[in-house]
Image (cartoon, rainbow, N blue to C red; front, side, top):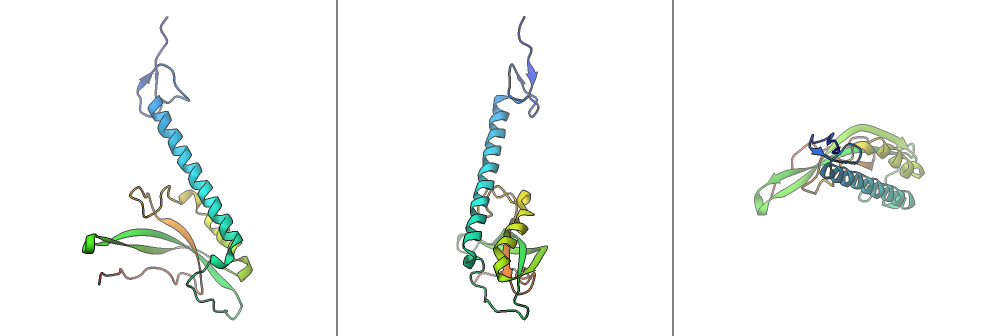
Length: 160
């Protein structure tokens, strides 16, 4: 008696024996996607650990003015790469959109708060960075600022 063919759950192709109902090609694609997701989670965990160990790197370029209550605003932005124009072979710019999540904390709580807020968006982080042709959506970044949503992009830059 000949073995009965099964049908791939993904592409509906016939195959004699498979792994969890997938043909070899679909199984290879699923394994690659799982590895990429695992690598992205590992890279994010490394970045968050670095941030926790080096809080001085959390707000480069931001004036560290003391607010009256001594607290800082940690906000989450969705950052996407946009095409600026064709001049000089083409140029791009980042567009920051306030994600609606922020927290006002003391300076010593900034690293922990950034980790907690970014964890809320971990599932929505793209698999590839925004500067990649494979980018599949905006990156979510935690920013330290004086007032929530002050880093929101409002005007498209122009080429000079």
